[in-house]
Length: 82
Image (tube, rainbow, N blue to C red; front, side, top):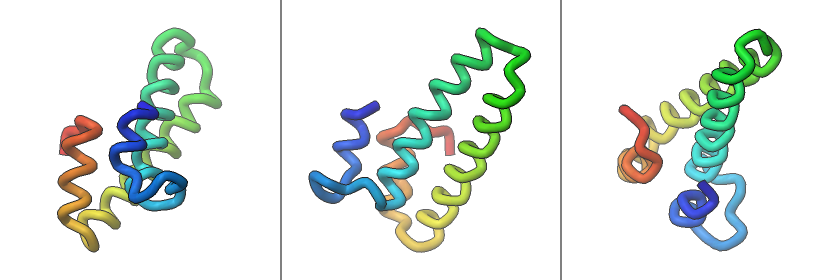
């Protein structure tokens, strides 16, 4: 996932742009999903997963509204369904 984040980043030290945040959240969501599949009763992690998904959705909506080209690029590079 680190490789995809570097592809999306605007410059070397970019950590705050919406695109990079979406990439980081996608990585976090994948890790939490795998954890929850293994430990089904871990409710705290499932709450964290829901929060991460909602935050990524908000960031994707922002990109879609303001920067359509970057939105399409992020969706394709991260293999998101939208």
